[in-house]
Length: 425
Ligand SMILES: [Zn+2]
Image (cartoon, rainbow, N blue to C red; front, side, top):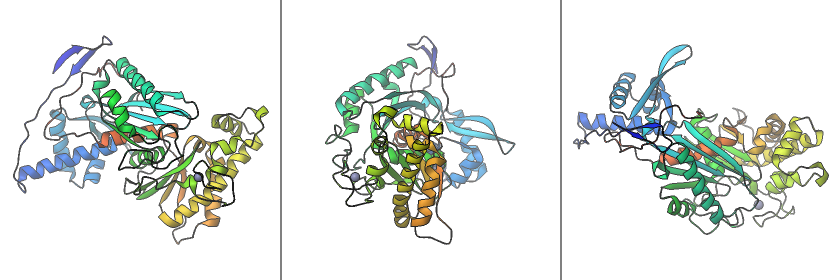
């Protein structure tokens, strides 16, 4: 371990612990131990932070085996333990060690940019958000993002090279085979380019991109309200409307990445023209622009935030407009339930913050239009992470792609990890 002075002037601790890699023969006690260690590390990468008991449940290993592995990997610097209390009892909380590096999560929604930097235990160490102009474009945005990420890393006493990966959420379906926006018209200015490659070329770090609904859904399924559900749908209601489909904790993307594009379910084939070139899509009735256009300019409803504030303040017409959107979304959600049959529906996005004003009419529509079943219809709940769900999902896919070798510790960063960082989620 060596001490270096970081750019911020704080003393940073550089860890460089190496455990010799063993090439154990398959089936031997040693290879079993290595496989068990790898399983513990993969589970922590996926869930962030777990108690030893939860870790035993998630890995299928016995509590005694988990306890031994945790002791061993904590001593070698790969894991970090702390104490917490669960149901009034003292429990050991385990996470990957913070000094393994940092990841960035980035969320471009239609009107906002959110950026968060987290350690491998998913503790957010710094975050920022900015408004975006309508019709933002890839080139200008990725140039600005590169500068912002560099500045944020500098305030932590590091540089871009200390990021081990970046995850990014975009407001359009992404083709998992090409990394490009898969449907023309849904994100003009970002089409025809491999977005991950384009950002990676600017910052020299690996980048992974998916749609905002998928990543919001992933965050909720891994560490939020969808954590205990076997399958869930995350419906993102904002400027646009889309859904992320989760089965067994993983995303179902479809061949082109457009599974869950609920905003383009046809409600009326003779309805208004949609930005996707079809007519009468759900978005033309319940998307942000459709809702805001219902108010005369004199009422000053320019953004969904204005509509939300008015509804919260008891404005009858604002509440009615949000309730009608909920009713329409409930009809499309009923079709989704008939096809996908999820256990839980989680409602996020800017308008998701309207809570029951939006969700109660959604439930009512779902009850009227979905196929009934003996066990009842899926519960509809709000998102745990509010406007940060998609950014947390971007952090999750970044971490999914980081290789943490349970046998050989990586050479690690010189980021200042003491004193405590300014924000902890
Ligand atoms: Zn459409």
